[in-house]
Image 1 (spheres, rainbow, N blue to C red):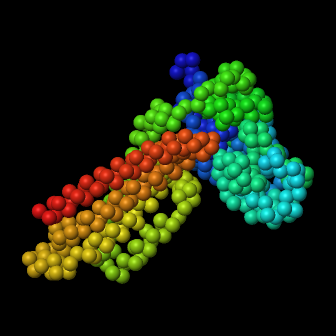
Image 2 (spheres, rainbow, N blue to C red):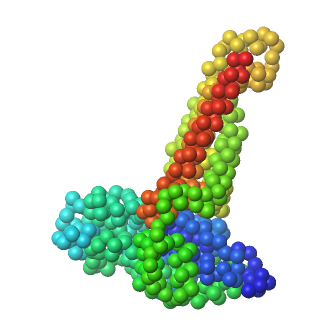
Image 3 (cartoon, one colour):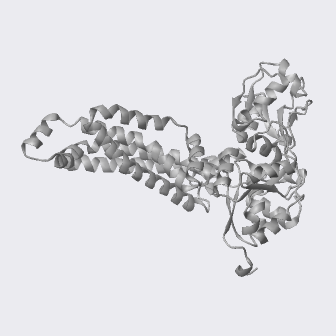
Length: 481
């Protein structure tokens, strides 16, 4: 198809941080690709983050479930019919359409060798059972709070990432986990799915949640997406999840195979890539560039703001505790919570909110060390500078800051090394970096993929540490001269 026949602009497709959402995001992207430039911003975290990205216009469409829309987005405690859902979503500038054809409901599961319990109601008779539930399920209106009230469950669950819950169950670290009914690992691990005898969980039919302007902006692509209606069966979805999680295929490859063949017929499993292959994969340079960009810009911005704040705190005793307390409080805000707050405030996902978050976390060591270094300058040297007729500005530039430089560099080094690790959270809002591999590894419970993200980050942290050690040595040598 010629570029003249294509829709203008870029269709931005989102997905959450679990296998099925990655695959559906790829199916939507590849279905639209012949008609429009399309990109997949994958693994954007939980419902709150991906919804904020949709409302801010950072993405245009993603696959969501009717039960989630009713309870988490529209805040209803009962299922909604499609027409009422559309009316309420329209007030938010959103629409829902294209039922994909399968229902992926929540359920609780136990190991197959646990024969005493067959239904959710029987869990109340065993208060010592250890529940390991996903963080989103624990907080959802249609998740643990309502389920515990409906069935009178006394247990206190612990939060587990969905990707590692199956392994925790197999290792007997927990006894009960929450699952999606289309999870491929239910059969792989031989789990017993507990009967929902009171029909607490609503239907979670997969649909496309989109911004209302998408059909008008991308008419040809939207027509192509309409062709997905009713095409994905529950068995197809389970097979696609299995192809990724068990056979080691890529999200894009599984989506392409399904779109090309119209079936999820199982093909011989490809050999899983080795750890070294994953570390030096084709995306290594791109992820390194993204990670370095986040690191350098955030630390540079923290220096530009933090060093003057440290100087202010050093020379103004009344403000010192206020400034240090303020940057200290910023450090205590959980990273994902800060990102979730920044998305609606800034109206975007990606690099900018990630930079703001990293800047906030880099401030404390820079401000504190700048203040400490200047305060520790001997008072006699300051008096000598005044006796020589130096102004306060000249004394700061030629006496205080040079003498405080080693302590200041130690603070900047701490901020930079910390930022290498903290920057991995950027992947949760589509800013890339090594965290992209880590989020995929968590979703798939793939330790090699986790290491493929963690090892380059660790190497970068060591290189950063070494570079600052050299700079500090140079600074000390220069002062001794």
